[in-house]
Length: 124
Image (tube, rainbow, N blue to C red; front, side, top):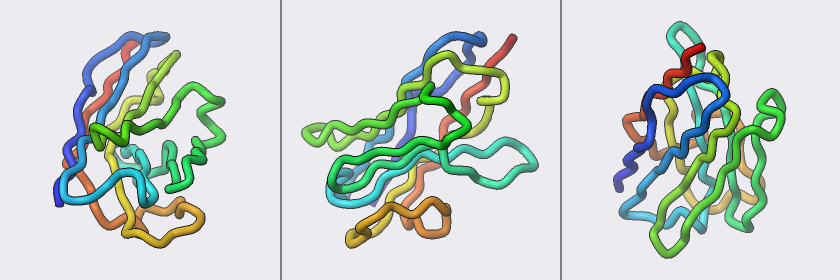
């Protein structure tokens, strides 16, 4: 099982980024997949998750700026980030649960597989 995030970098406020999460050893379709982020000195927080039936949810505080999606053929999870703000600066992690969840959990301990993260830095 392997999870590898990519696509992070430095961007100016108001810009866009697309993060990718390539999974191997399991399917991104038949389980809950999520993006979390963690800034220094803070806890890991949910950004968005998507369930096995395709319904997706992003954190209320994002006001629809971010969109989670997946490509079943490539087995990749994405996070489209638009109108980014300096407070979006953080390490972004892709997480996956084991199969069986009907509703996706929002807390990180319920996610079993993690990548090393990709850093996003938003400047003014």
